Image (cartoon, rainbow, N blue to C red):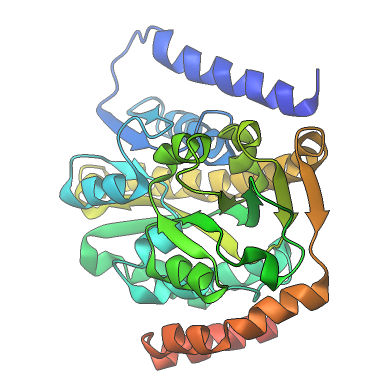
Length: 333
């Protein structure tokens, strides 16, 4: 059994046990945590680990139930539900949160993080804390930055070896202005849609391709309907463990601290397992798809093609925040 299959088996077992294990003593507070991806994906593995930590640290007084694979809706839907108080926690991408605070979109700007450690250093710095704190006036609480990983392009037409290979391809993007403009700026045709509609869209050739980290490509089985995977590493995708003031105010001071401590520990776990799986999956995906590494010079060409678009997106952000973020990027290298 491969390590990936072992992790998948553990995820299924944990999910199953959470559903069938009898509880002798009912929890004081029950909470629902929704994710958009399957139980085998690091987003949901992290959610299950967070739920276990909360149970341990509150002595069973707070019970977090995880609803995975978009059963409660898309990232956009679930974020709105948390804000409205009809869902307690979720783990949206920072791109999704840019609709609440445009400054979140700076994380998704292409070709700015060197590697995962660089991203950690920036997001765990005061500039990352300021982003999370900006959610408070929306009635939301950001408990930590999780990882989805660097994004790569798959498609059913041809390998992407240079900018010209993207021309005319219908590429599914998140429902986010930056990603739409990014792929339109690379001369592709961006088609925004929820991730849970994507497999069918690829299968029916409604779109030619998509862009996601290896973990999403694998857990969503896109290799069944895509022939080519091109390692563009064009953007880093972060997630946020998100709850609301409404939920936190239900808790005692001790329980609130336990939630925050569980979130800190779950953040480290989630990032670690995301990176472990991304490394393993590249080898596994190579058996199912044709994979090519996009040369640095071609990635730089893509970056240059986007210069005017990137400036337009940076202009709508807070100038002071942009300066602080740029300093964090430079100082963390």
